[in-house]
Structure formats: structure tokens, C-alpha cells
Length: 256
View 1 (spheres, one colour):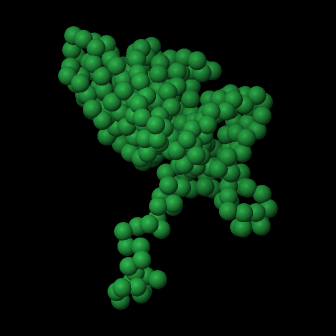
View 2 (cartoon, one colour):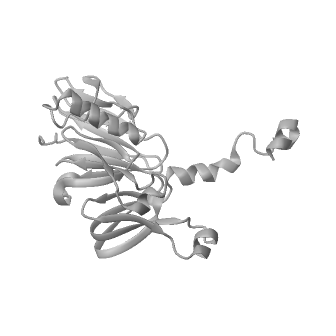
View 3 (cartoon, rainbow, N blue to C red):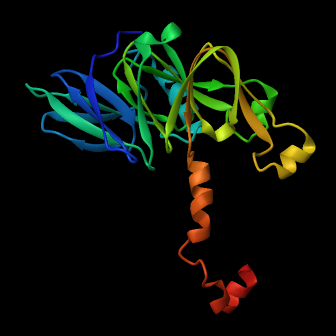
């Protein structure tokens, strides 16, 4: 795997953040399809099948990699933004829902790897490899995909992960941390990750914390989010456009 491009960046905003990447001539940043907010003159984009981390990769390997991305609900393609001009130029990227952008230098991570929730990746320096990780532990499969299908980022450059709400960074020192399954954003690859039942039957049914909890064990960094998209949708659902109008029609009476 080739060395990643060295890119400069700025995180802008507070509750709804974006990342602004500055590219030298010839530098490239890869991003999820649809993540681009703006790009200055000189930057050209190209949609490709794969992250470009292995230029010699054959068509079959590219199809296999792209097909695995479809399993996570992501696009089959990724967009490559390259500065083709003669001076520095910027491109901005944003996530599809409000939250925080986490900049992570993969060069400082153990084994240069990071495990990210399936919809957490935003963009990264060219040379970063993206792949899919299937958690083989039984508990992870029981939660319907949350914690079962994850993304792995590998490289030695900058990567940017999106989280909902406020981000908490924790460093575990041979410790165990139990977290709501949707609140795990990312963790270093040496951390042992599993999904386990939350306790007794009474706690699972009446405790309000759900049936399952994510368990993180070991030594390394963990990033958590306060408002995953699932919780945001649940919080906003009572305030939908038709809230309070159900009783004004015959159809509404059946919906009650």
C-alpha cells in the first residue's frame, strides 16, 4: 500500500461541522459520494470504483471491494478530488446529518488501522485503504447490523470520520467500557469489540437502554457519539408534519 498524500485541513463550524481540505498541486482526497460541499478552481473530481490505494488492483478485486461496500449501504463508487491546477486549492466536505467531524491521523494509530461504524467515514487522504470488517461474534449479529458490519481504514495519512452530536474520545488502559450500540463511532483495531445483552430480563425490557450494549475491551483509543442518527430520527418523529392532524380525517382515525 502506497504512502498517503499529506493534506492540510481545517474543521469549521460548531454543532454542524464541515472539513475544509487544502490540496497542493497533484494531491488527492477521496470521499464518499455526495459528501462534497464545494471545491475551488483547479480541483477536478472523478468517480472511481475503489479507493485507489492499490493502483495495480485488478478488475475482479475492484468489483469485490465495491460489492462489499454495497452491503454497508454505501455507494458502489468513491469520488477522487485532485488538484490539477498550479496553486493550492480547497475542497469542503460535509456529512448528510448534523454532527461533528473527527480528524484522525492514522500514522499515530497502532498498526495504522482504525475501525469505524458503517456510515461514519467522510473523507481521507489518497492512499488510505477502505475495507469491510464483519464481526464474527454472535452478539454482534443479533442487533441487526449495528456492530456487525464495520469499516476498516488503513494507511499513514489523515482520515475524517463523522459523528452525531458531541464526540467523546476515551483512552482505555486494559479496561472495559460498555456503550449504547449506536454510540460507538470508531476504535483502534487492537480493541476487542463485541455486542452483549444488557443484563437481566427486567433490565432489558423496562430499563430503557435497549436489549444490547457494545462492549469495548483492551488498550487504545475509542470515539463515542452522543446522538447517533437512529436516536435523532426517534427524537424528531413525534414532531412530523402530520402531528396533531390525525383526528381531522377519516384516515387519521384509522392511523390512531
